[in-house]
Length: 266
Ligand SMILES: [Zn+2]
Image 1 (cartoon, rainbow, N blue to C red):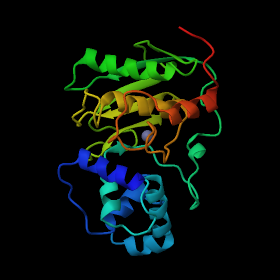
Image 2 (image 1 turned 90 degrees about the vertical axis):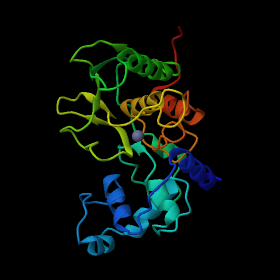
Image 3 (image 1 turned 180 degrees about the horizontal axis):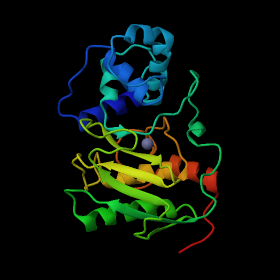
């Protein structure tokens, strides 16, 4: 069932996909997204790395997270899944056992306070500012529906959350030349939580795949402490090909396990 959904998803996302016939592509992906140690770069040391880092087991973990058959082989379907546009946050380092739904939640809440501020310190070069602000605000409001968090656009450099549209930059992963990396979150040296959106990307505003709203919804989930999940019908699944217009039951359950039920109303 999950495989069927994933394949359908891939068909939606790509009119054409160039498959890599080599294991190199999968090895780079596995390093980049937390399945294997090492720097994701092409080199002639892949054979040695494959042995040392247990490439096959890492591949199985990826396949389980994406709802694929855990064959440990970089087959066509697996490579297709690796091409799906996705969040840059590393996937959870789970054991080879079946991933439990609950393990997508971090051990403890990241925030003690509930009134958070954000700022959009760098806007997109090609998107309307008001439209961006509207979509970001909608995404924050969705999390507020089910928690006691409030999110205010303070337009201050001291905000709790800094949102930026980037083409290439100094923090962490680069968007340059990587169309599959759509956004990610990070903590900077001052402790500020960052959300970076790929400004090279053509964002959608129609609720379909690659929706800016959905991506903001997903990244805010990370900001609040949620990790990626293997629940494909969830906002916290790492790819953007199944965009949702609202939080799904798993996401609501996960965030309320961290912070409790919403106490206030209005
Ligand atoms: Zn993510």
